[in-house]
Image 1 (cartoon, rainbow, N blue to C red):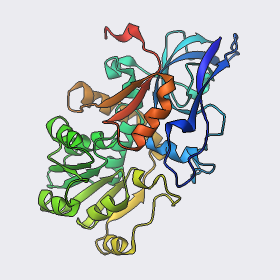
Image 2: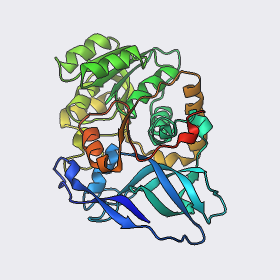
Image 3: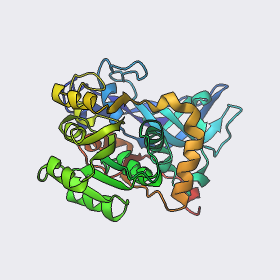
Length: 354
């Protein structure tokens, strides 16, 4: 059987901006037979995420993420349906997910890398398992639980940068749900600002491309900042940190403004900002959600419950077609998405009645 796949066509260079042409679609032959322990799956949805930028380099600079290889199939978060199984845990028709799903229309996988998912948890919206009811949701929830130190009723103010993205759009809502009295988002377009305040429950939003972020922060956070959910790093974060309170907390989720630069992760703060951080005893510890796997199951159930109760609004930007994976990646890296960026490879019609 002939199937399509996406391979890494070229590397952008450690200091380069990724473009769609870094990826290439090609046809490949899928074997007719599968071996014991394997399954054949049809891909439904694939995820593109900021962390993947480092996988485009020869060296990811990380001990837990491996680089993509030139002319080899690219992989990442994916959801699919089993078409044939020789693995004891799976049968035809099961919906499954993996963090290492090849960017391919159909694929034969070792069943041991797959996890079964229950469509009822997402009311049939399977793509949500790649976003709010998946790794971005867990990153936001566990990050806030472990590093945010929120105490309900203590009038804490949270600021979220990259607030209209996959994690940011959830983090602000979760901040409120866990007891923050004020949540302010920072993003890059008027449309995103309006979405944050009109649909996602943020108390205010700042467009960092218009006016002074520092002045707007002072106005919108009169009591200072107690919790900062940082998705971007760079100048925006330096500005927020300068207005953080004594003994406040930074949740280091991501540093997308720095991903096209050859700098360590997390990047060092400028000396003046680092001096403020130390003087005010602001915590800024690296946060890696994979270190909290024991909290994944309860986290998914909590996120699903909030979603079903209407307390967690989920936003995603959907692009169709495997041939558009590169374009989707480029768009996501430049803020073209609202909520989670997803690529639909094929749809599963049996769930539309859920």
